[in-house]
Length: 224
Image (cartoon, rainbow, N blue to C red; front, side, top):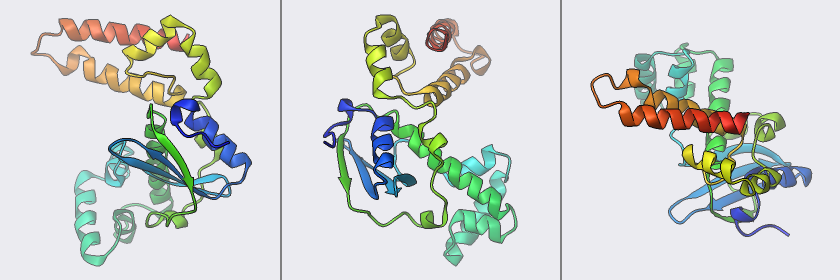
């Protein structure tokens, strides 16, 4: 039976089950103020539509050192006038190669999927296939290792819920459940960067140092 709510399962278990069934359709995660869509083709994740994380193509291309911010802004303007997506515009202007564009698109899709592993409560629906986002049909489906490796499963959530120390450690990092290795690592790095005293040389760093120490201790406990 397909679960009605996300708190009855985990996204990892849900996607694993749909993959075993070679299911084709659209998985909807319905929160009170937003709806996320995971498009599956023969059980593989083809596309992810979500506003849970801000992961724009241009930002990823800049972060990966593939393009400058100026080049991205120019490509955006040129692409808009010519009806091109920003990736197409960057390729057309020979700023990035087609293979580099594919890597950025894949990273963008994984970032959206990562954000969904952080959703705590949502109503679940599996519907007939919806139209794919523009350009998604041109991409290869996500590799199963990217979809499932290090992701939280129900057995992990149940193990965590019986250990008060682990529950507290997850709370320190801002989670009410086990988000999986990749999302946990990402959140830890974000918090360390945000709280590091070097980022706040003129402010009162006492509270931030205390918070940073708690974050480091919590992460070490969870990864120990």
